[in-house]
Image (cartoon, rainbow, N blue to C red; front, side, top):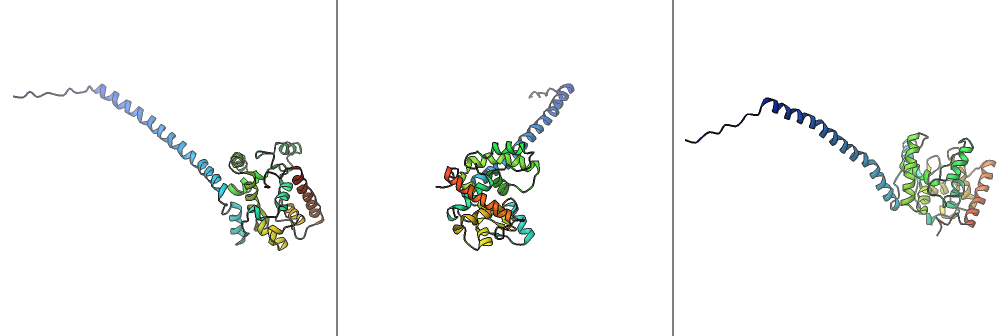
Length: 251
């Protein structure tokens, strides 16, 4: 007859130790699993944003948060994309002279302008054209610290990926230049009934002069203050062209 081998029974104390060890391991695995997926999910937004920055280096942004919100509010907006090569050279020079004269000299932040603004009690802005482009294309309007922090994080990335000429081209096409009017193409037609290619130095300077407050200023019917401001911008545009500060966006 075959001998029947009896299995040795595990002592109750041993089984209890194994069960306790499993119970201790499970929470650790759960924490590691959660932590791993947290970091994976946390990396998704910055990676998507980086992909957008790279994409918009070659593809024109179809819309922005501001354009979308104004279209909802007004029902329609006036906007037509135009290549920078099809714009009068007076326009980009005027925009740079008005908004960021050292555009070709900085890496996204104008430290001298920031120091001057701080010395002035932060009564004036120090945002560069790159920062304004980042705000317009990737973010939203407003003065929240969250938006400013995101703007500060994205600006160097845009400066690395986009050439200066591309930054200015995008800005020229997304900036609001009158109520519901976005970009230099629409502004040229709205204010002067002309194409952006045919803008004169004075017309381009007047459009640039309305940019800080496009809803409250009129380039076609300027006040005496706006005329003086436009004259200063026109002179500034000629200066940056002469001294080489327009070289980064002019071939």
